[in-house]
Length: 377
Ligand SMILES: [Zn+2]
Image 1: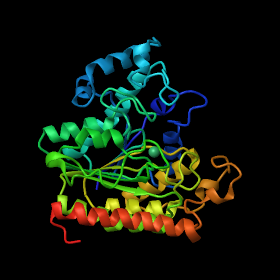
Image 2: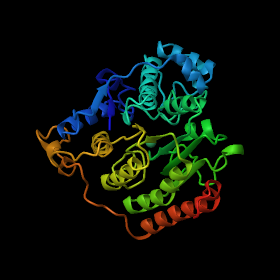
Image 3: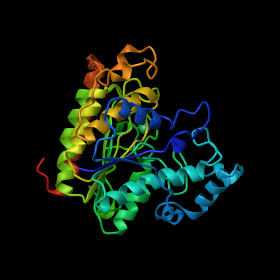
Image 4: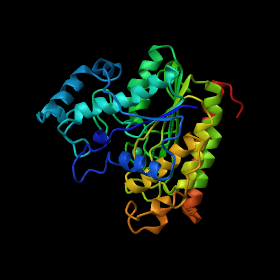
Protein backbone atom coordinates (compact mmCIF):
# COMPACT_ATOMS: atom_id res chain seq x y z
CA UNK A 1 0.00 0.00 0.00
CA UNK A 2 1.08 3.58 -0.64
CA UNK A 3 -0.59 6.45 1.16
CA UNK A 4 -0.36 10.23 1.00
CA UNK A 5 -1.30 12.73 3.70
CA UNK A 6 -1.75 16.12 2.05
CA UNK A 7 -0.60 18.85 4.37
CA UNK A 8 0.47 22.46 4.35
CA UNK A 9 0.98 24.49 7.52
CA UNK A 10 0.42 27.71 5.59
CA UNK A 11 -2.90 26.53 4.21
CA UNK A 12 -4.09 25.38 7.65
CA UNK A 13 -3.21 28.75 9.18
CA UNK A 14 -5.84 30.51 7.06
CA UNK A 15 -8.61 32.06 9.14
CA UNK A 16 -12.26 32.78 8.36
CA UNK A 17 -12.40 35.26 11.24
CA UNK A 18 -12.22 35.14 15.04
CA UNK A 19 -15.83 34.13 15.72
CA UNK A 20 -16.13 31.72 12.82
CA UNK A 21 -16.62 28.02 13.72
CA UNK A 22 -14.62 26.68 10.75
CA UNK A 23 -11.00 26.43 11.87
CA UNK A 24 -8.59 25.16 9.23
CA UNK A 25 -5.97 24.74 11.98
CA UNK A 26 -7.66 21.42 12.85
CA UNK A 27 -5.52 20.04 10.04
CA UNK A 28 -2.34 21.04 11.89
CA UNK A 29 -3.64 19.49 15.12
CA UNK A 30 -4.47 16.26 13.28
CA UNK A 31 -1.08 16.18 11.58
CA UNK A 32 0.75 16.74 14.87
CA UNK A 33 -1.35 14.18 16.69
CA UNK A 34 -0.66 11.58 13.98
CA UNK A 35 3.06 12.15 14.53
CA UNK A 36 2.66 11.93 18.28
CA UNK A 37 0.88 8.59 17.99
CA UNK A 38 3.50 7.19 15.64
CA UNK A 39 1.12 6.82 12.71
CA UNK A 40 3.13 9.09 10.44
CA UNK A 41 6.44 8.56 8.67
CA UNK A 42 6.03 4.85 7.91
CA UNK A 43 7.90 3.68 4.78
CA UNK A 44 4.80 3.56 2.56
CA UNK A 45 3.56 7.00 3.63
CA UNK A 46 4.29 10.36 2.06
CA UNK A 47 3.35 13.84 3.19
CA UNK A 48 2.78 16.13 0.23
CA UNK A 49 2.01 19.83 -0.05
CA UNK A 50 -0.96 20.70 -2.25
CA UNK A 51 -0.78 22.62 -5.51
CA UNK A 52 -3.44 25.08 -6.67
CA UNK A 53 -6.00 23.64 -9.04
CA UNK A 54 -6.04 24.86 -12.65
CA UNK A 55 -8.75 27.56 -12.36
CA UNK A 56 -10.23 26.35 -15.65
CA UNK A 57 -11.27 23.10 -13.96
CA UNK A 58 -13.57 24.96 -11.55
CA UNK A 59 -16.02 25.53 -14.39
CA UNK A 60 -16.65 21.77 -14.40
CA UNK A 61 -19.11 22.76 -11.66
CA UNK A 62 -19.14 26.51 -11.00
CA UNK A 63 -20.57 29.41 -13.02
CA UNK A 64 -18.01 31.80 -14.45
CA UNK A 65 -19.87 34.88 -13.13
CA UNK A 66 -19.79 33.45 -9.61
CA UNK A 67 -16.07 32.71 -9.83
CA UNK A 68 -15.47 36.29 -10.96
CA UNK A 69 -17.28 37.60 -7.87
CA UNK A 70 -15.23 35.26 -5.69
CA UNK A 71 -11.99 36.54 -7.25
CA UNK A 72 -13.08 40.12 -6.55
CA UNK A 73 -14.12 39.31 -2.96
CA UNK A 74 -10.71 37.75 -2.49
CA UNK A 75 -9.05 41.13 -3.07
CA UNK A 76 -11.23 42.69 -0.37
CA UNK A 77 -13.71 44.30 -2.76
CA UNK A 78 -17.34 44.29 -1.59
CA UNK A 79 -20.35 44.55 -3.91
CA UNK A 80 -24.08 43.90 -3.44
CA UNK A 81 -23.90 41.26 -6.16
CA UNK A 82 -21.73 39.15 -3.91
CA UNK A 83 -24.32 38.78 -1.18
CA UNK A 84 -26.86 37.65 -3.78
CA UNK A 85 -24.47 34.74 -4.30
CA UNK A 86 -23.86 34.03 -0.63
CA UNK A 87 -20.48 35.76 -0.50
CA UNK A 88 -20.32 38.10 2.49
CA UNK A 89 -22.85 36.30 4.69
CA UNK A 90 -22.15 35.39 8.31
CA UNK A 91 -21.30 31.81 7.31
CA UNK A 92 -19.33 32.80 4.22
CA UNK A 93 -17.59 36.07 5.02
CA UNK A 94 -15.54 38.08 2.54
CA UNK A 95 -12.01 37.09 3.47
CA UNK A 96 -8.95 38.38 1.71
CA UNK A 97 -7.31 35.52 -0.15
CA UNK A 98 -10.35 33.22 -0.04
CA UNK A 99 -10.22 32.53 -3.79
CA UNK A 100 -6.55 31.56 -3.72
CA UNK A 101 -7.15 29.46 -0.58
CA UNK A 102 -10.01 27.70 -2.33
CA UNK A 103 -7.79 27.02 -5.34
CA UNK A 104 -5.36 25.31 -2.97
CA UNK A 105 -7.94 23.23 -1.08
CA UNK A 106 -9.59 22.16 -4.34
CA UNK A 107 -6.10 21.55 -5.72
CA UNK A 108 -5.36 19.24 -2.80
CA UNK A 109 -8.46 17.15 -3.52
CA UNK A 110 -7.75 17.12 -7.24
CA UNK A 111 -4.11 16.18 -6.68
CA UNK A 112 -5.22 13.36 -4.38
CA UNK A 113 -7.50 12.00 -7.06
CA UNK A 114 -4.79 12.21 -9.73
CA UNK A 115 -2.31 10.36 -7.48
CA UNK A 116 -4.83 7.55 -7.11
CA UNK A 117 -5.79 7.40 -10.78
CA UNK A 118 -2.17 7.46 -11.92
CA UNK A 119 -1.32 4.58 -9.59
CA UNK A 120 0.95 6.72 -7.39
CA UNK A 121 -1.12 6.14 -4.24
CA UNK A 122 -3.86 3.83 -2.98
CA UNK A 123 -5.09 6.02 -0.15
CA UNK A 124 -4.94 9.83 0.06
CA UNK A 125 -6.21 12.02 2.91
CA UNK A 126 -6.89 15.73 2.42
CA UNK A 127 -8.11 17.09 5.79
CA UNK A 128 -8.81 20.49 4.18
CA UNK A 129 -11.25 19.14 1.62
CA UNK A 130 -14.91 18.25 1.41
CA UNK A 131 -16.62 21.60 0.79
CA UNK A 132 -19.82 19.77 -0.05
CA UNK A 133 -22.25 22.70 0.41
CA UNK A 134 -20.88 25.05 -2.27
CA UNK A 135 -23.34 25.50 -5.14
CA UNK A 136 -22.82 26.26 -8.79
CA UNK A 137 -23.31 29.98 -8.19
CA UNK A 138 -23.70 30.29 -4.43
CA UNK A 139 -21.42 30.11 -1.40
CA UNK A 140 -22.94 28.57 1.72
CA UNK A 141 -22.23 26.45 4.78
CA UNK A 142 -18.61 27.69 5.02
CA UNK A 143 -18.03 26.41 1.45
CA UNK A 144 -17.03 28.59 -1.51
CA UNK A 145 -15.59 26.14 -4.04
CA UNK A 146 -16.92 22.59 -4.23
CA UNK A 147 -13.75 20.51 -4.48
CA UNK A 148 -15.81 17.30 -4.39
CA UNK A 149 -18.03 18.19 -7.34
CA UNK A 150 -15.06 19.41 -9.38
CA UNK A 151 -12.95 16.28 -8.79
CA UNK A 152 -15.81 13.82 -9.36
CA UNK A 153 -16.94 15.81 -12.43
CA UNK A 154 -13.43 15.50 -13.87
CA UNK A 155 -13.32 11.75 -13.21
CA UNK A 156 -16.70 11.29 -14.89
CA UNK A 157 -15.47 13.14 -17.96
CA UNK A 158 -12.76 10.50 -18.17
CA UNK A 159 -15.45 7.81 -18.17
CA UNK A 160 -14.87 6.67 -14.60
CA UNK A 161 -17.47 5.52 -12.08
CA UNK A 162 -17.15 7.16 -8.70
CA UNK A 163 -18.82 6.38 -5.38
CA UNK A 164 -18.99 9.15 -2.77
CA UNK A 165 -19.73 8.31 0.86
CA UNK A 166 -20.37 11.32 3.09
CA UNK A 167 -20.46 10.71 6.86
CA UNK A 168 -20.26 14.41 7.79
CA UNK A 169 -23.24 15.37 9.98
CA UNK A 170 -24.59 17.73 7.33
CA UNK A 171 -26.27 16.74 4.08
CA UNK A 172 -24.06 17.24 1.01
CA UNK A 173 -26.54 19.45 -0.85
CA UNK A 174 -24.00 20.86 -3.32
CA UNK A 175 -22.71 17.44 -4.33
CA UNK A 176 -26.23 16.01 -4.55
CA UNK A 177 -27.26 18.81 -6.92
CA UNK A 178 -24.17 18.33 -9.08
CA UNK A 179 -24.90 14.68 -9.87
CA UNK A 180 -28.64 14.32 -9.27
CA UNK A 181 -29.33 13.18 -12.84
CA UNK A 182 -26.20 11.07 -13.28
CA UNK A 183 -25.70 7.32 -13.03
CA UNK A 184 -21.89 7.40 -13.21
CA UNK A 185 -21.60 8.75 -9.67
CA UNK A 186 -23.19 7.05 -6.66
CA UNK A 187 -23.72 9.68 -3.95
CA UNK A 188 -24.48 8.38 -0.44
CA UNK A 189 -24.92 10.66 2.57
CA UNK A 190 -25.64 9.87 6.20
CA UNK A 191 -26.58 13.02 8.08
CA UNK A 192 -28.74 14.61 10.74
CA UNK A 193 -32.23 15.14 9.33
CA UNK A 194 -32.91 18.46 7.62
CA UNK A 195 -35.82 18.92 10.01
CA UNK A 196 -33.35 19.90 12.71
CA UNK A 197 -30.12 20.81 10.90
CA UNK A 198 -28.80 22.94 8.04
CA UNK A 199 -29.09 22.66 5.05
CA UNK A 200 -32.59 21.19 5.44
CA UNK A 201 -32.29 18.84 2.45
CA UNK A 202 -31.33 15.17 2.27
CA UNK A 203 -34.65 13.36 2.69
CA UNK A 204 -34.63 9.63 1.97
CA UNK A 205 -36.94 10.15 -1.00
CA UNK A 206 -34.41 12.38 -2.79
CA UNK A 207 -33.10 9.43 -4.82
CA UNK A 208 -32.06 11.15 -8.07
CA UNK A 209 -33.86 12.01 -11.30
CA UNK A 210 -33.86 10.79 -14.90
CA UNK A 211 -31.12 8.22 -15.43
CA UNK A 212 -29.83 9.18 -12.00
CA UNK A 213 -32.75 7.56 -10.15
CA UNK A 214 -31.25 5.24 -7.56
CA UNK A 215 -27.82 6.89 -7.65
CA UNK A 216 -28.46 9.46 -4.92
CA UNK A 217 -28.95 7.96 -1.49
CA UNK A 218 -29.80 9.80 1.72
CA UNK A 219 -30.00 8.41 5.22
CA UNK A 220 -31.44 11.17 7.42
CA UNK A 221 -30.93 10.49 11.12
CA UNK A 222 -32.71 11.88 14.15
CA UNK A 223 -31.29 13.94 17.00
CA UNK A 224 -29.70 11.67 19.57
CA UNK A 225 -28.50 9.07 17.04
CA UNK A 226 -25.67 7.20 18.77
CA UNK A 227 -22.99 4.73 17.68
CA UNK A 228 -25.33 1.74 17.61
CA UNK A 229 -28.01 3.41 15.49
CA UNK A 230 -25.51 5.01 13.12
CA UNK A 231 -23.47 1.86 12.56
CA UNK A 232 -26.67 -0.13 11.99
CA UNK A 233 -27.87 2.28 9.27
CA UNK A 234 -24.45 2.39 7.62
CA UNK A 235 -24.04 -1.38 7.42
CA UNK A 236 -27.56 -1.98 6.14
CA UNK A 237 -27.23 0.41 3.23
CA UNK A 238 -23.71 1.46 2.27
CA UNK A 239 -21.67 -1.75 1.71
CA UNK A 240 -24.32 -3.49 -0.45
CA UNK A 241 -24.77 -0.40 -2.63
CA UNK A 242 -21.07 0.30 -3.14
CA UNK A 243 -20.33 -3.37 -3.91
CA UNK A 244 -23.15 -3.52 -6.46
CA UNK A 245 -22.06 -0.24 -8.09
CA UNK A 246 -18.41 -1.35 -8.47
CA UNK A 247 -16.81 2.11 -8.60
CA UNK A 248 -13.40 2.75 -10.16
CA UNK A 249 -12.53 4.54 -6.95
CA UNK A 250 -14.13 5.75 -3.77
CA UNK A 251 -14.29 9.25 -2.30
CA UNK A 252 -15.21 9.57 1.39
CA UNK A 253 -15.93 12.71 3.38
CA UNK A 254 -15.29 12.00 7.04
CA UNK A 255 -16.46 15.13 8.87
CA UNK A 256 -16.28 14.65 12.62
CA UNK A 257 -19.27 16.85 13.44
CA UNK A 258 -21.30 13.70 14.20
CA UNK A 259 -19.58 13.56 17.60
CA UNK A 260 -21.74 14.20 20.65
CA UNK A 261 -19.51 17.10 21.69
CA UNK A 262 -19.87 18.95 18.39
CA UNK A 263 -21.32 22.41 19.04
CA UNK A 264 -23.28 22.62 15.77
CA UNK A 265 -25.11 19.28 15.55
CA UNK A 266 -27.34 16.95 17.58
CA UNK A 267 -25.94 13.55 16.63
CA UNK A 268 -24.39 11.67 19.55
CA UNK A 269 -21.59 9.54 18.21
CA UNK A 270 -18.37 8.71 19.99
CA UNK A 271 -15.02 8.00 18.39
CA UNK A 272 -15.90 4.30 18.58
CA UNK A 273 -18.83 4.43 16.15
CA UNK A 274 -16.90 6.79 13.91
CA UNK A 275 -13.97 4.38 13.87
CA UNK A 276 -16.17 1.40 12.98
CA UNK A 277 -17.58 3.24 9.99
CA UNK A 278 -14.15 4.39 8.74
CA UNK A 279 -12.98 0.75 8.98
CA UNK A 280 -15.94 -0.33 6.88
CA UNK A 281 -15.23 2.38 4.28
CA UNK A 282 -11.60 1.30 4.10
CA UNK A 283 -12.77 -2.26 3.41
CA UNK A 284 -14.88 -1.19 0.43
CA UNK A 285 -12.15 -0.07 -1.96
CA UNK A 286 -8.42 -0.30 -2.50
CA UNK A 287 -8.49 3.17 -4.10
CA UNK A 288 -9.68 5.67 -1.61
CA UNK A 289 -9.65 9.49 -1.57
CA UNK A 290 -10.56 10.76 1.90
CA UNK A 291 -11.62 14.36 2.61
CA UNK A 292 -11.96 16.05 5.97
CA UNK A 293 -15.22 18.00 5.86
CA UNK A 294 -16.63 19.50 9.07
CA UNK A 295 -15.86 19.07 12.75
CA UNK A 296 -16.26 22.03 15.09
CA UNK A 297 -14.93 20.56 18.32
CA UNK A 298 -11.47 21.01 16.93
CA UNK A 299 -9.55 18.86 19.41
CA UNK A 300 -11.86 15.90 19.16
CA UNK A 301 -11.93 16.29 15.38
CA UNK A 302 -8.14 16.01 15.36
CA UNK A 303 -8.42 12.83 17.45
CA UNK A 304 -10.99 11.38 15.05
CA UNK A 305 -8.80 12.05 12.06
CA UNK A 306 -5.76 10.58 13.81
CA UNK A 307 -7.71 7.36 14.34
CA UNK A 308 -8.96 7.52 10.77
CA UNK A 309 -5.42 7.90 9.39
CA UNK A 310 -4.28 4.91 11.49
CA UNK A 311 -7.19 2.81 10.18
CA UNK A 312 -6.59 3.86 6.58
CA UNK A 313 -2.99 2.74 6.94
CA UNK A 314 -3.82 -0.40 8.90
CA UNK A 315 -1.52 0.56 11.77
CA UNK A 316 -2.13 0.66 15.49
CA UNK A 317 -1.52 3.96 17.26
CA UNK A 318 1.69 3.44 19.24
CA UNK A 319 0.57 4.49 22.65
CA UNK A 320 -3.02 4.81 23.71
CA UNK A 321 -2.18 7.75 25.96
CA UNK A 322 0.53 9.46 23.91
CA UNK A 323 -1.75 12.45 23.34
CA UNK A 324 -1.60 13.22 27.03
CA UNK A 325 2.17 13.66 27.03
CA UNK A 326 2.83 17.24 27.98
CA UNK A 327 -0.89 17.64 28.54
CA UNK A 328 -0.98 20.69 26.30
CA UNK A 329 -2.85 19.51 23.28
CA UNK A 330 -6.13 18.69 24.95
CA UNK A 331 -6.04 20.88 27.98
CA UNK A 332 -7.38 19.57 31.24
CA UNK A 333 -9.98 17.18 29.81
CA UNK A 334 -8.77 13.76 30.90
CA UNK A 335 -11.33 12.02 28.73
CA UNK A 336 -9.74 13.24 25.55
CA UNK A 337 -6.22 12.23 26.50
CA UNK A 338 -6.93 8.85 24.91
CA UNK A 339 -7.87 8.24 21.28
CA UNK A 340 -10.86 6.14 22.31
CA UNK A 341 -14.03 7.28 24.02
CA UNK A 342 -15.97 5.64 26.79
CA UNK A 343 -19.14 4.20 25.14
CA UNK A 344 -22.03 6.62 25.62
CA UNK A 345 -25.28 5.17 24.20
CA UNK A 346 -28.43 7.28 24.27
CA UNK A 347 -31.39 5.73 26.06
CA UNK A 348 -35.16 5.84 26.47
CA UNK A 349 -37.40 7.69 24.05
CA UNK A 350 -34.53 9.51 22.37
CA UNK A 351 -32.93 6.19 21.45
CA UNK A 352 -36.24 4.69 20.33
CA UNK A 353 -36.98 7.66 18.09
CA UNK A 354 -33.49 7.58 16.62
CA UNK A 355 -33.76 3.87 15.84
CA UNK A 356 -37.22 4.32 14.33
CA UNK A 357 -35.98 7.11 12.03
CA UNK A 358 -32.97 5.03 10.93
CA UNK A 359 -35.13 1.95 10.25
CA UNK A 360 -37.56 4.02 8.23
CA UNK A 361 -34.77 5.41 6.02
CA UNK A 362 -33.20 1.96 5.62
CA UNK A 363 -36.53 0.40 4.62
CA UNK A 364 -37.20 3.16 2.12
CA UNK A 365 -33.82 2.63 0.46
CA UNK A 366 -34.22 -1.15 0.41
CA UNK A 367 -37.57 -0.77 -1.33
CA UNK A 368 -36.75 2.06 -3.73
CA UNK A 369 -33.00 2.05 -4.39
CA UNK A 370 -31.81 -1.55 -3.96
CA UNK A 371 -33.94 -2.79 -6.91
CA UNK A 372 -32.21 -0.31 -9.25
CA UNK A 373 -28.92 -2.04 -8.41
CA UNK A 374 -30.48 -5.53 -8.41
CA UNK A 375 -29.66 -6.00 -4.75
CA UNK A 376 -31.98 -8.39 -3.00
CA UNK A 377 -33.08 -6.52 0.08
ZN1 LIG B 1 -20.78 19.14 8.56
